Image (cartoon, rainbow, N blue to C red):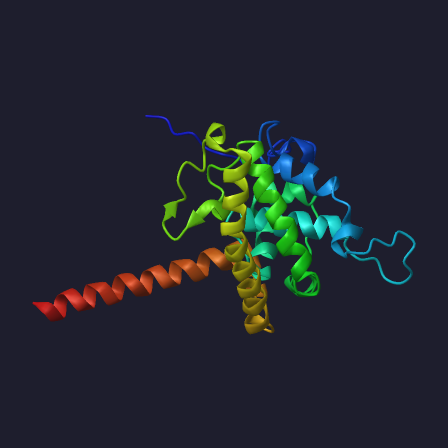
Length: 226
């Protein structure tokens, strides 16, 4: 039987443009447009196009990262940074930008109240666009709140009642995430191999040595049991 073999060195391993990383129907596109249309000044987030000094990440990019992350259960700045490297929807959403966790944590803390309010608007958006399925903001403990995925059951009154109910939960989530960021300050994020192991031959030799030691230990253990 023949096996399918991949080739990670081929030039067409990923689409030629980041915009092709996600399909047209992927919900991440709704979050992208949602944040683009927000008036950030109304939420107390200043946008200064002529700001002097070192370049910063645009507030919209940071909000897209955080709001989308919350919707899919990624709250801490460390996890959000990691997602920018390894999760395709996040790579698309950030257009390839990779802010470090300290930058994310700082924005998270400085604009905590604005993030809470924008999250509440995103909940309404998800109900209206029927993007509830898989959204962690609609989970209370281990259960979905009743009929959350069926937009047709949502009257204006019921929607307002639900938003009032979820409001406190969102406030708690944001407060806890900011606290986690503070507790994790100074800890390493991405696990990296030692420089000498970046050489493929040395990496193979190290793994073979470990496998050999494990095999010998296992053999010795079996002999002692006899």
